[in-house]
Image (cartoon, rainbow, N blue to C red):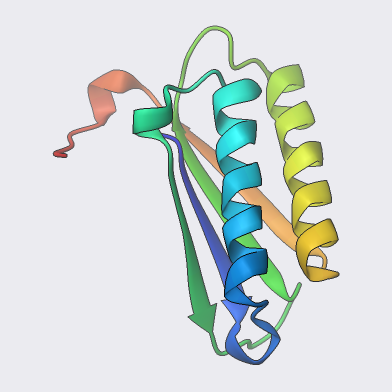
Length: 108
């Protein structure tokens, strides 16, 4: 963890090269701001049929840690917003969900 999922309307999906750059930037933000181990970062992009709201929805799930304070998360979200806007030209709705280690059961 963290897991970053970007939901982007299929008709506005950037090129593969742009998506690779965005995934790399998301990974850098997770290893930098959130101090996550590279092996624990997961970034995916999902093509969607948009209904209503901001054109991109970014969902970030992460393990709660003492160093992931509200100010850290605010800086992370600001940098993520900038990365998404720079890569796509679109405004994202960003939601971050923190989980206690005791509430996470995982494989691989």
